[in-house]
Length: 538
Image 1: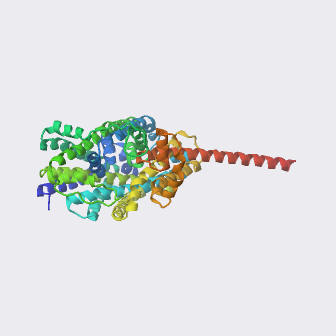
Image 2 (image 1 turned 120 degrees about the vertical axis):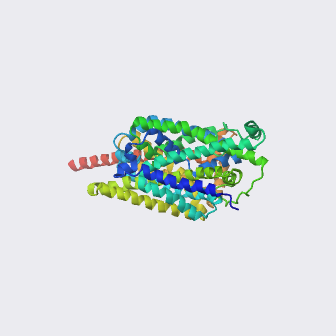
Image 3 (image 1 turned 120 degrees about the horizontal axis):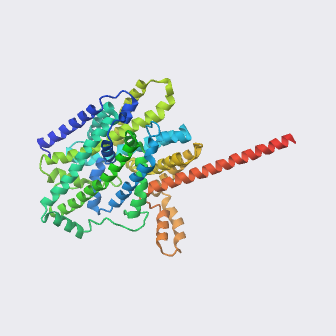
């Protein structure tokens, strides 16, 4: 059955054409890599602040966050508290380092402190994790969008990546930032419309909706229990959420590139502050959308059955609720605008990934190797060509993800696996005395290895024997919160909000230990050399 009218399709097509035209208009004058990757540092801070929020808000977020509330409650809001705290810390501590000279990525700070090996290790971590994560975001977003647009997965993937690639290729980061700012307004308007529309369809209006939701405990947002495992709790938010955002907004180029495009330290701080002000109400809006959708479907039948989902496929049945509501319960014209809100979030995340991947590959790998042997025109051309190459990579990852469940799960987890290594390495680059790259590189690699084991060991045949060997050791422990946490750690039952904190600690600890062992080795070598010299003299 076709749920979209000619009016809805007109709105969708006009949006796609308009956002491409907007990107081309704002980014038409790109002559150097500074223009292409930093927007000539001429973009106002408020545009960058809105772009930061849009870049981290994918279509999966707009679809999945209401799904979280539908299937449970709004305790995810505790995570957002950490997101706000981290932005404040970054604005105070880290932003000034970004404006000491002209920096194109946070990985230049690694080079300043430890040399090119550390820089390229960090840049490589980002390129791999962002390619997989962004490709998977495209695929998972295309699953419910198939339902809305009635097209197959591959055409949907090519549509999103192709259109985003078009204006990113022409306009660089300036085009991306301005289209992000416009797209932020669109998906915010979609959420606000849903909040206002559903109570008009249910008896009792707003009061009735919230009373029914409260009775079902859908408005519960606080969980004070300290736990390493699900569900979300306040400690995950204040500690885990803070470290997640310290990494994503401080050590990963996807967001940092926007801060670097600001004119000054003051503007960078304002942009982060604006994103801190906006992010909490934004997530609250979409969590409440999920709550209201739950109430709505207690009173009305679902016009489309929820599609079956594969176990481990990265998208849950609840993630289809919002798209089904858009298609079947909203009047025409308005339906078109709501679908545009989802499309805007999808395109924003794709264009953000493209420009960040191109900037790291050009400025952190190619330009340091080529040095002064190549002209600025060469690097600008390479930047645009690499944008196309990364676009093809995203299409490939997204398309492969449709069948290979293991790759899909790995890609979703990889950001958590590498985020601690990147944040730990950045902390060392900023606060450790200049030294050798080896301890930093070893720390990051050990962190990645440990976090990979943590994520995938429970899926191996050796996991059950491990439990049979380790768990009896806790049998005689007196029951306490400490015992519960130890058992969760032994079972490797650790929820993703803790990944970045744990990975950071491993990176820092391993780097310190490697440095100490190296220093002892140098001292032993010096003593042995002095002894040999004495023997020769005697």
